[in-house]
Image (cartoon, rainbow, N blue to C red; front, side, top):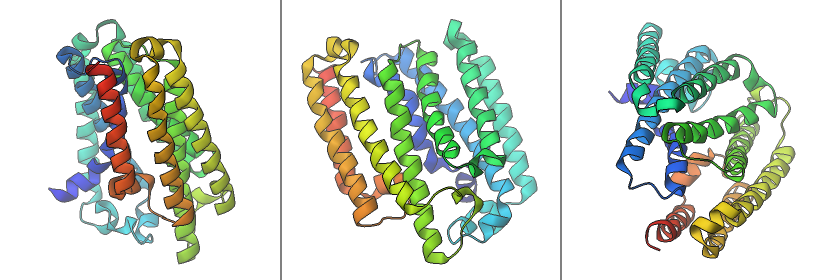
Length: 294
């Protein structure tokens, strides 16, 4: 069972919680109808993402076997056969299509918009898997766009309006995570002496500069988000002070990356770093107080 969970990369489903962003910031988290639609969208997006992970692992079996960590993946290690992986892939795609079809009644007029987002995400990542992940800058941009699509899917599923600043903030925040991951791969390549085509067009100096610029843009976007008229009207001026948590979290992430030279992926840092975890909890608590306990 565990090997199949690893094949689906269930731990990566945390990224799909971006589907809940429109619901959370609209103050409708206690609306069970909208919550159910968001959960439904989360499940479909997770199935679509897992199907992409299987396709990626299937196409990268040989290169993954030479990687110190990726060689432990179910397909690369041989724990799951290619045939079994293909069966699981077909099952995931079929289940995703079935859920979208039978879930049309929940999305009403936004059904086709939601379905289009899922289809675009799937085919965009197919192009990423087989070609675009080897093109510097475009690769991280596609990863970032994937997070934007998650937020849009959540908005279309619930019919909740998403501000332009929220979309831009999502893109830049995801860009920070994507560039941070590339930087970690560059450091590992220097240590092991092994590199791969996906790192062509990058070096550590460029990654450090791009990471710093992206963090700055993310903070500015969040600041503008809190100052936007619709947010000020909904949460009042006090929401502006939550920028303190955001600045600290980004500074801590940069410290882990640039000072302590953490080479692991950004999601692993978030899972393991207590300072960032506490900051995220405080930030969420501050918003909960603003939204639900006025």
